[in-house]
Amino acid sequence: MAVNFRHRRTEDPEINLIPFIDVLLVILIFLMLTTTYSKFTELRVNLPVADAEKARNAPKEIIVAVSADGRFSVNKQAVDGRDVTQLASVLANAAAGSENHLVIISADANATHQSVITVLDAARRAGLPQLTFATQSARGAARAGDGR
Image (cartoon, rainbow, N blue to C red; front, side, top):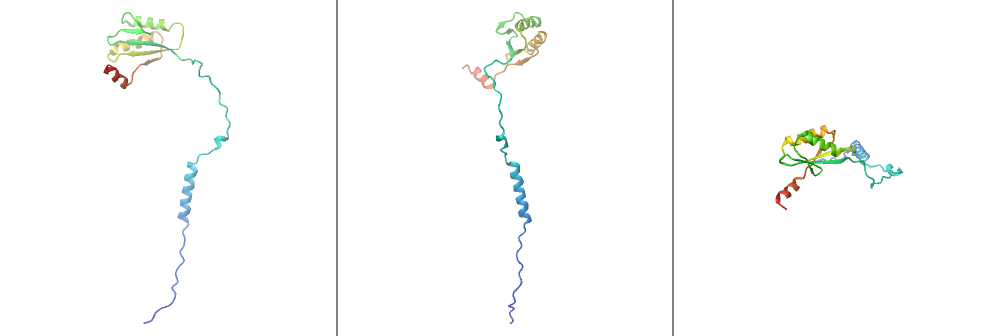
């Protein structure tokens, strides 16, 4: 039996650097995109000063309440009748003397649709284009119904 003692030639292992470089580039791009820059701390900005106590030019509010049976009140003053022209004249008197009024319609949940439309029409006739509706949260309505 002959034993072959010749040394086999083994190849040196190669390290493939291309995947390693690809991973490093991806990490570098990720870090570049997620890094926050602190150049903004170098800017010195003097912000203007405002006095919060001074009154803004906020619109005056005219609150129109609509009851469930269709009666109206403007700024807690009952309006006689349910006519659009009467309500429009009362709204015009409430808005007299100044401009920039906001009409807040506070209608009962059981008020008819027509009574709310009457308020909208009266506000249009009185020249009051800014309107909004008063609501309450569902939690507040549940408490009011509990009798608390």
